[in-house]
Length: 249
Figure 1 (cartoon, helix red, strand yellow):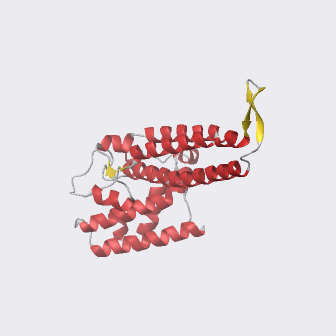
Figure 2: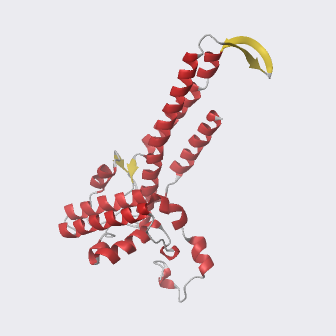
Figure 3: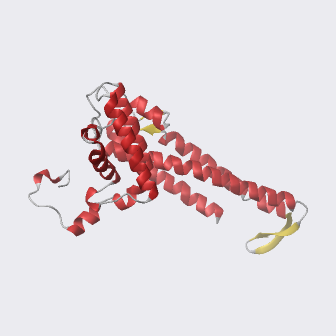
């Protein structure tokens, strides 16, 4: 039975289940989801909500799950709906009641919000590295052809003569602006929603700052509803990537 099925007498059809499940998409965030669960478990133990033994069992179980996913032997079931339930169900099966205690003080809402930010930040680092590599290649080509003269073009017509190096370096500047846009975006995404719960935070005396620090965030989201609900960072990231695609083309 699905978590949301309490008010329904019957289950959904197979088609509806597949249509509503996000697992085919968000399973790509398994590494980020496990990292968040690991940090959450350690925080729960530090706050005395669960025992140190439970936290150790959870962390060990998560490591085993991550290994099976990376090896390609993990079984994804569409009935789990999303990566959070897929991992949690397997964890409970593997380590027992300790795994069930992991969900204390959190929701799939703050999980997916955090996973999305972590995943995007990981993509950011990869994109910055590739951007730098491309700029280095262009610069090297410009240096190798510093004395080569070519016609400049305007309105598809021959215009003034320019250096090939000048033309090549012209493509570096938009790439640098893409870097600036990515770094500017990163400042807004650099806050962990973990601890927001379903939408209203928690009353268990948890420490979201500790989770944020372990996950590499500088801050935590200041409003729990905004933390779980906002996706403007995804729209902004999509624009930056679209602009980068135009610059590279």
